[in-house]
Image (spheres, rainbow, N blue to C red):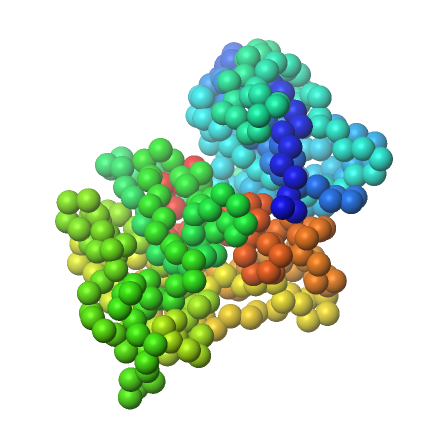
Length: 410
């Protein structure tokens, strides 16, 4: 396995005030625990996750700082803004994860470089206050931090201007479920390939439960009619059905007792396997749009709000530029317009991300380096770090497009 998991250090720290300010008075108690974990390492580079648990009063913004060891650097980050001045690293919250309640946690990740050795930070600071303590178990892998709090004076941070499009306020409604239907790039998994849907839940408040029913290797038709799609094409050039009975996964969603409830959301992403020329996975353009409409109509009839997502891109380089490589992007957008459903163009957003991370050009070796930390060896599916960044694209799109589900984001 190319990723060497190693929990390098767990250190308590005092929670920092970020650019969005602290929502407490000057005398508020601050404290936090930090779990720092190297998720992958290769010659000269590494990936890491940082989880901060707030042990003090709720905050609406945070800043975490630490010092790099000699020879260390940071090349890219996700779920936080990370800057380096000399050896000092400053991580500030993203627009969607600044609010952290008492006892709650927030995570971000980064890729870095190293020469000589790659030690974990020994100290984290927040608002100039240093804290030491215990968080997790450094010998057994990732833990739920239960750090010893540190206290110190709180210094209010300067408040930055409000965004031009303020995030929706979380509604005072009953808890909802976010249901997910898609393929392997979305599915739950703990090892490569890891779908972005498995990394989606942490972006939401406790009012949201994510039910991910994405399955690897499925087109929209094989997902809907599992076992009933034949290997023979009909006169229209589509894979014939032996029965119109729905798959158990779709039937479960439609179940009045245990499935969809009014106010829930359904996120749908297909189009990667649908372009197969052979049955049973083959789906033509018209049939693809038809089946998206079937799913949207069934959801709406139950008071569920569907969201279409274009297929996420693999990494394909044209020189130093990442380029698009998926079909069914236009079909997804057309179906969204025809059915009055919001659409997130994950295909375009993922290509833009790859370019911002400078994953092109590369030598095609997906076992090492930044591209290896992002992708599995097949250049299509994701390691955990990549899946988290793709999930972040969806969370960002919810806010930027004012899709009502954004009201439930942290």
